[in-house]
Length: 302
Image (spheres, rainbow, N blue to C red):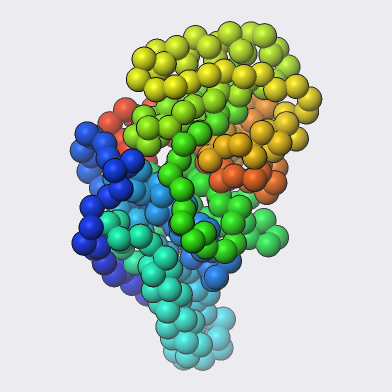
């Protein structure tokens, strides 16, 4: 399989004032996948996260590569070049959606599987987050939630927004599990950079204990940002979807790879990325806290 084709574009103007952070870290780009016009929301969400985290945006378009063994020819299928050109044109269209002031890297990825290509590229560029849109059958999204080496953000929008808004209210689904604590750490880190309000949403069976723990963990952050803890009644998945109407981003944990590390959130993360009214950032179980990294968590190559 041929090597990944890469490009680079840097815009002239600075990042928006709401994204300014005193932190300086090595490059850990936000990786956004473009699969056609219905991926416009993913590109804009990736741009928003990249600007907030002060990291480059890596735009990727994968195409199906047909090797010799499948083409029954002595050389790879000539259709590969056609698909590669189409993917390159797609990633250039995606770049046109990125606001000025964000450093952009372009990647055209030959692959026999979209999710495998994206996880491999995420490791190669050491991404801090991987951003996708809702695919129509959910196969790519579900595979990424299980195997991605870094947090996965899913945009519910399939069309570009004329004027994307900054993150103002970030919600965290919290059930006192290890995965939820990672989600809380990421949400607080992102909210500090975005100067956003955080709503810690207590869910789960032992709601009183969960709420008390959420209060305790959120308290130290209240000195530098607005935080509040709220309790949801009813079935967690449906209740979280309902409350997503008033959020700019919802962060949750995930079991990942089938390991039962979360009592609740792993069972509803897929439902949230398919049904929530706002973008959802899913924190996989394999990451760890790393304060110096853009999201306060380990990145894809760690």
